[in-house]
Length: 354
Image (cartoon, rainbow, N blue to C red; front, top):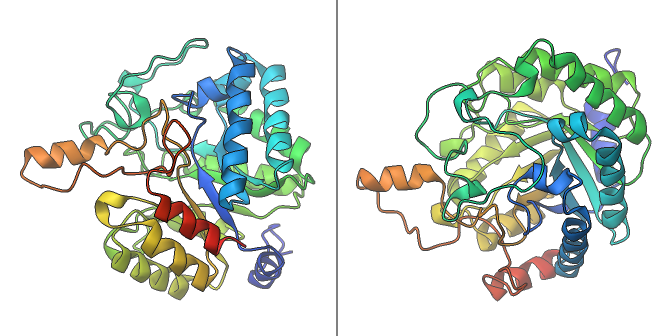
């Protein structure tokens, strides 16, 4: 290891080469509109029964990995239950040969004026990507996103959550990768989360975790990897380099070329699939397989979070005359009833699975 605890590029490549090709997915269980519904005690048995069914569906499609984001407020208010649920989630995945990429921090968040948190029944607003009209994807706000770590009194508790989870899972083979931060700088946050991201990396490395650490870059539009200062630091701190790319396929290819010019560490695309832009299973997945770049598309199944619906930004663009084909599902592979959105896609995934 380097003196900072970061893996060398050679160590990262050795770890990556020892893994089967990573074929994963993102998303909440179909009966959950958000992560609160997923992790809380309310309706836990019902939610986790659905998670088990969806893991069966995923494994039958060929997937061997899943990316999951934690919810700080549930840990804060239901600490013992949350940790038990996290352990149960890892068990459900492991029983089906699925390993977990666990994400701790997240800048894809709505402004303070739209922040809502309460345990219990989570309202669903139908017709909106993310299941709520006022999501970070609504395309109509310019305020910085807000999250509890912005409260100086709460930030140490957020770090305590990170350390507690790290202490429990540091040497756990059910865990594949630590995704330290999702989309640093998104939500108009810029560098606001940068100090917290640095501390999270330091906490995990102080625990001497067995798994690689990463924080993704996501400004990859137009086939470029023009990273913001906070994204550049995320990449510089990472053991493996993760990226998001929802751009059309030719731009996706150029993004990979640009990233490979920036780093000699292994690449994993931990968010992709946007049929509206021509970012499709038929084009992107065979390319990732051929290049042996790990894959986590969004998402598995049509659900309350409605990520099959277009981003609100697409509707805003339509008002200005930008006529993309909004009849297409944006994300997701399966319908509520478990039948594929397009059987040709799921057949292709099975044919490419390791």
